[in-house]
Structures are given as structure tokens and as C-alpha cells.
Length: 362
Image (tube, rainbow, N blue to C red):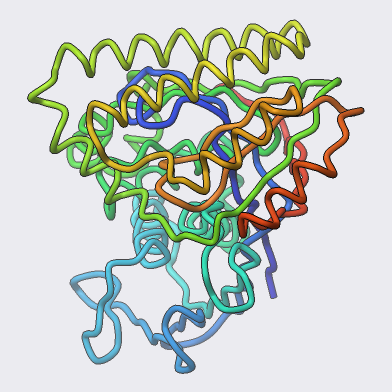
């Protein structure tokens, strides 16, 4: 049996702008995980996951490729991961084999509500990691990220992939997304292996040192949010305000580059200023686009942070889910946490999952 895990993620800054190729963001991996267990099988395979109910999905191969038993096919990141790796295996002239997958997640609460920690990305990364071991592909971290990105944009073409990068590389990272249209065209023209070997316009990732004098505190509002819906809503609205959207992109770049520079310099006050600036920039975007990024609960989360000299903002697409706070390590958090409790904001005891391996060039 092969057992792997992939961490969840939190955006620190750069949300929405990161969907545009080359625009920077900062993310962290967190110490809650999706786990995938892989067991070899014969003649057919299966996928066990709570999202499918009690009965596993059974799959096999025919001339069309991967086929689900009873032709019941949900749009799903696990299946896309399998199909993408299977295409890569075929292109590398490796004999295909069958296997069973069992998926479990720590990225939701006991009632099944998701925390907004990137469960789709984590299950994609974990599935690809398991298949990498199963087929002994010996893929580098960057190659595994690229496979995960190819699998993801087959399901969600506008996905930035920042969550995939955080789950793949761990720790604090600076990330900018590739041109997904180019990536899809590369796959169509050259297959999965050819697309992985090519340079991707706009894509970059590098490690960042965590701020030594600041602690990361995470609050969950209990309100579910749909990243894809919120991003699509923005895309639907932005064209009527093209100049305003361009201004947002440049302001976001300014905020995130300031954050990265402050992290590189280990400048705690600079980090907090950049986080506050990123919150203001998202608020200005929301005022123009009216997609509901900072909910009242997220506003309380951030306001209580600023009241104790910390900096807070929504994380990810907003509209619910989590907010992040960066506070001095010696800050008295008791008042903040009491206010969160009164506001039905749940403090999540999360830590940053450390970096995994090197950032190779391929």
C-alpha cells in the first residue's frame, strides 16, 4: 500500500489578481491534510471518497480511456488527476496498471463543511503523488505541480493553481500563475509530457522565509464560499470597468511585491502594512465589482486584529471561509479571540506546513 498526504493552503495576499498570468501572490501551506491510500488491484480500479457516498466508484479502461462503471461520471479532480497521469504514463510507454484509491480529508469540520483550505487542490496533489510512487515516475516537485495544474485546468480552466503550488512545495511561497490558455494548447499539441517539458509563460514560484517576529492566526467564519463562483462573477463584471480592473491589478502587484520585499527583509511592520494595503485593495475591488468579498464576519475578524496592532484580511476569494491575521509574537490575543467567539468566528489551530524538498528547475 502507498500512503501519501498533501497539505491545505491559505492565501496571504494577491487574491483575484493571481488569476491573471504573471501577477504575484503569497500563500502558505497549512498542517491539515488530504490523505490518499493506493492499493494495487487487477482488472478494474476503484475510488473511495466521502464525496461519492458509501459505495466506491469503479473504473476500468477501454478504447476511450478511463471509464466509470455504469457511465456515472461527475466532474471531478481525482478523475482528472488519474486521466492526466495515465496519459503521461502512456506517452512514456509505461504499462498501465489498476489500483484502488481511498481518500480522507482533514480540511473540513465534523459536519462536512469545508474550511476553505484548498481541498480540491490537496486531493489533486495527493493523488498525483500517489501515482508518482505507484508508477515509479520519479517526478520532481515542479513536474508534479505541472501535472496537477494540467489536471486542474481540465476541470476548471480559470484556476490560478496557487493552491496546487502551496500543496506541492509547502511553507511560504511567492507564486504567479501561468497562461492557462497556452498550457491547454501545449497539451493539445504536444501531449502531457510535452506540455510539462515546455516553459509556461507567466509561471513562477519561489520560497519565502517566514516572518520571525510574527505569528499567523486563522479564523473561520463558518460561512461557505465558492471560489469558482466568485471569480467567475468578477470576470463577468470586469469588462465594463476595464480601466478600474487594470488599476486593481497594478495595485495588487504593488501590495504583494511590498509584502514579498518585507518578508525577504524580515520586516514585521512592513509585512503588516502590506497586509493592510492588500485588504484595502480588495475592498476597492469589491466596491466596484460588488461580488461580496469581505463579509461582515470577515470585516469583524480583520477589524479586531487591527485593534490590537495586528493586520488581518480575508483569505482566498472571500465571501466567507477564512481570514488571516499576522500579529506580533508577544501580542495579547485574548481580547481578539473573545471577540471572535462572540462573533461566531472559530479560531483554527493551524500551523504552517514546512517546505518540502527543493525548488528545482524542471
